[in-house]
Amino acid sequence: MANYFKHKRVWITGASSGIGEALALAFAAENAHLVLSSRKERDLEQVANACTAAGAASASIQVLDLANHASLPEIADSVLKTFGKIDVLVNNGGISQRALAIDTDLSIDKRLMDINYFGTIALTKAVLPSMLTHQLGHIVVISSLTGKFGAPLRSAYAASKHALHGFFDCLRIELGEAPIYISMICPGYVKTNVSINALTGDGSAQGTMDPSTGAGMDPANLAQKILNAVRTKKEEAVFGGKETLGVYLKRFFPKFFSNMMKKRSLKA
Image 1: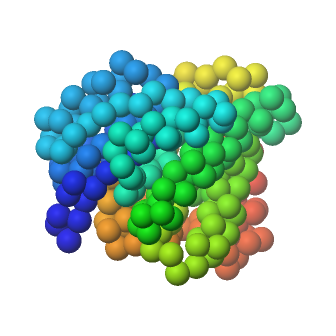
Image 2: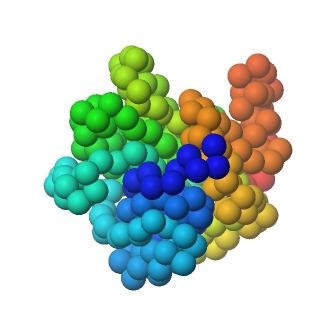
Image 3: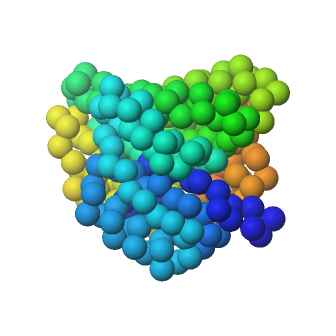
């Protein structure tokens, strides 16, 4: 399956840095046609140039804001008119949080849902009819381990990721036998700027790197794991270090896990 992504049309949100940039370069190395999106046009241009050098069949940029839901259908129509179809939609764009629930203004909870949840499903709904028409497509959702269990200082972030699991689990069932696949990807700690850009209770960026994030998985290594999960059409994949044990502790030993996380919260 070495040439699985060759000439496939891959649209990646949040492609200007972090996991999205690493995924773009990984798909580029497999000679895919890329559409790279985020709010940051200059950064996208740099990633697109790097992707061309890495072997992409083509690398185009499409600036978008996932919080501007009304704009997404028109943007999707434009992309589909240009490329004809999208084989792989990678919903990677999003933002994290670092604040206690009680200290987080409701507007920040809404902002995280607007970007991480509603932005993702709005873009998916805009692309899905084309996938159904062509009877092909793969929707990849970059969730998080916090989409599987809660953690301190991440209430709104975890809520947005839990919501994505609920929506896409339902969508997968509704699609029935249609040859459209959905992969939920749940990384643990990844060495990106996610904690630096994470929103605090008043909406300002945290501005610092969490030690656990700084010691996390290399984005390029994660990208290769994600491509393999897509190739093999996995419905859900969990990646990371010892933090991934939380998925199993939460499922089989929920009370123990809850007490463990409470102790962690006291140290935070």
